[in-house]
Structures are given as structure tokens and as C-alpha cells.
Length: 472
Image (cartoon, rainbow, N blue to C red; front, side, top):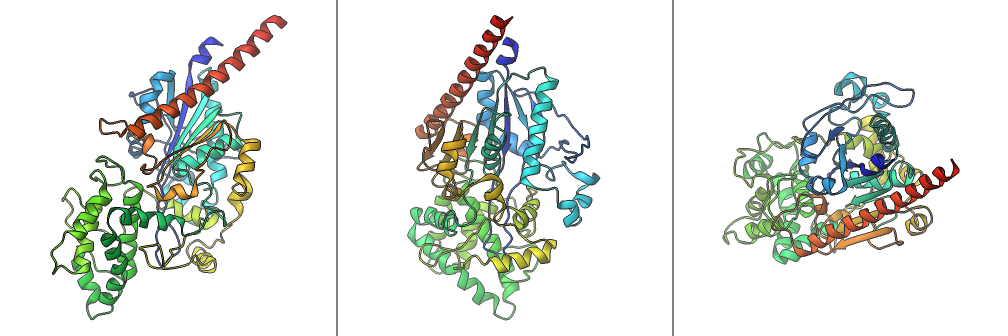
């Protein structure tokens, strides 16, 4: 019993999210992690390819998991403090966790993709954790879940759905309320826009005006070729929508990773990257066209190192394509852009168009109410107060996904840690000498809360053990 109680399992699901205002309503969203069992800095990979009646084979190795592992330094740093084994489980259908033997077969059609669901992924994790603890003879060891973005959603949902598996969860930047009329659909893009306006109102206005300039240029003879030349694309544009999507992604990611120090989570970027983008846009010569200004600004995101010769519009360096399927089935997160507050083109979420596009792409119809039916969301305060415990929702208000998360304490054990300047799951990143005081204090608060969960768990286990001994 004593040996078991010294081992803490930290299960980490880390990912990021971004959507597009594309004419195609399908959003882009990131992926999850491969199972890698990591005793601190010594990396060990284990693979489980068993077929069971319920679950598909999962947990194969792939180096891409290191993208997440190296950007989850907070977890690495606290693992020794807790005497913990750190585990990164990969989400099925991402990385190399492919059913049917290959990615081509797994993504072949709606039938083979039908097992790519959140509920199946959570069940995978539950089976994995249970088997792992049994194999390590550590059945009594507490498990704490960590996740950022979609991973934060999974961490919170797993704590609620499988409370016997994990004693608590840190859900960083987890937009569990970004569904079915729970938060206003314009929230995400309003926050992105406010991030830019806060740095420079003229920068905000230039970006807001650029969309019309793009359309006007594209309608000219050879206009698409000229746009491709201005923005240094490797191939010709098929439409102005391609360029608008490319810019939309950059602005959204910049708002998410507007960190106070240089980082290379999505792309190599300077500290306060939005400030640098706006400096480029505002600092151009007076005779510089609006589109040239936009190119100079967006190059901070796509080419800060200066090493890129031309840009590929269809490049997916982080393997995010699987999210399109999830967004077309259960993860329907309505988005819109307001005329008053947004720097993006004005549009309203159109479910009919969304449904049509999903049918044309995958031959499936979305289930917009399934997540809230399966995992909750409406009247979240009552739900979590009544049925939840030991969840930290951490958010920085620079992050556009904070608008869909829990931003206030709901009970003594359902805690919201909100920072005014934080970016997308910044608290999960490695500590640096440039960390502001508020970030250091946020992490200290998280450690203190987790220590309290484990202390309570141990006291309860020891009390049960004492009762058992007396009964002998």
C-alpha cells in the first residue's frame, strides 16, 4: 500500500485549436497525442495493438508526439515533485494510432472513420490507465489528468465521466462551452480582434479593410496571379478564399500564442507576436499598399525566421485534418463574425450550409446536440456543483478560446484560474526566466491545488487501510 501511494500517474492530453472563416464551414482543429510513457526525461515508448470487442487498436509510436511533449514543460517540471510517472496517450486516428492498418484505410470513408469519436477516445484512455496501473502493480496510485485546448476538454470530461479513474484534472484553455447556443458564436473572433485592437487601432482597421481589398484585387484580370505574387505563394490561387483562409488562420493562431516571450509552439515567433505584426503593418512607408502591409505583418507568423522561400496553402504540418471529421459529426462549435467588433469579414453561422458541406465531404450529418447530451454544457454551474469535483479550469483572456471556457469558481473544488494576459494553455509550457510574476503565481496555485487532491486521496486510502487492518 505504501509503495502504491508514492506513485502518481500524470496523464497528459495536450493540443491546440483554431477555426477558419472560410467559405467552407469546416473548421480546423488540432490533434491529440500518441501514448508515450515517460519517466521524467528518459523517453520510453510502448505500443498496444490489441483488438477488443469495443475498442480499436491504438497507442502506436510516432515522433510527432514530441511536439506536444516538448511544449508541456510544466508537467515535466512538476513530475519529480510528485514522484510521478508521466504518460502521453495518443488520440485514436491521430499520429500513428490508426485502425485498419494505415491512415489511408482509416480515413477511407464514413464507415472506417465512424470510430473517431470523443467518447471512444475517453474510453481508450480509461482502459489504458486501468491496464497500466495493473501492469505496474500500482492500482492504488492516484491519477491526475492534464490537458490544453481539446486536450483540456478531454481532461475535464474524463474527470466527470470516469471519476473512479482519475482524482482530478487541470483543463487549460478548454472551451467546453463552445457548443449549441451556450456562448455567443461571435465570441472567438471578437477576442482575436480585441487582441489586435489592444495593440493598435490602426492595425485593427488595416486588417478589417484588407478583406475588401483582396476581393477587389482578385476580380481584376490576372488578379489571382498578382495576389499569389504579393503573398509569395508557391502556386497560383484558385480563389481569394484561399488567401483569406490563410490569413484568418494566422491571425487566430497569433491571438492564441500571443505569449510574453519567444516560442515556437505553432511557428517560431517573437515574444508578444501581435505587437510585432502590428509594428510591421503600421510601420510601412506611406506609399505601401494595404496588401503589402498585410503581407509584411503576416510574415511574422509564417516566416519570422526568414527561411521560407514561398508558402504552401495546403500544408498541414501538425496533422490537424482529423478534426474536420470530428467537427462534422459531434464537435459542432458554431462560429460567427460580427460587423461591429470583429476585424474579420462579417458572417453568421449557417447550420444548413455547415450540414451540406459535411454531407458533401464525408456523407454524414452533424449531431450538434450530442456533446451536450453526452458530456453536458448547458447549466454547467449546476452540473459541476452537483456532480463534479477536483477540476481546475485555467485560462488567459488573450486566448480566444477562453470565451468558451469556465471563467469563475463553481465550488471549493471546481476552480477557475483566470489571468488577464495569458495565451493558449500558457501555464502548461516550460517555465522560463522571462515568465511574468502572474504566470509563476498561477502555476504555484495549480501545484497547491493538486497537492491538496493527492493529500486528501492519501488520507482517505490510509483510513480505509487502517479500518481493514483492525477488521483482521
